[in-house]
Image (spheres, helix red, strand yellow):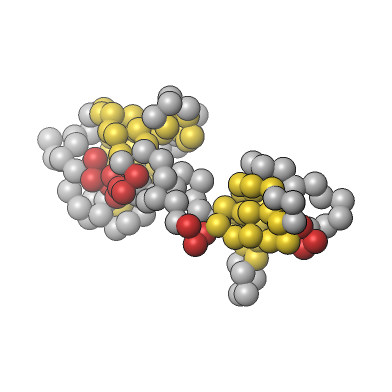
Length: 142
């Protein structure tokens, strides 16, 4: 039976959890995730975990921050004056918003702090700075 190597297209079922057991994503009830191993389509730790797996294999992998979404970058915290928010909007910590860059691309941010005159927005990936745990099942290769 063949094993997974870089360049193989695979289908996997997965259950992603934080170290406190909170689920952040799962393929349960959906089609398996399909991607090509080693092409950077998924985080490095997930990619690496599939090497040498056989169809039907299941494993649990602990993926440290460095092999997941990396640490939260201080430069991705943006401070905005409260006056830049619509008057009817009350900024609340944890609220998700979308900002646009100079090219019109939208990206999600989360309000991380509300100060007297400003609001601090976190533009890091929601899983940045977190160790992740994945239960993985290899469904098929090719």
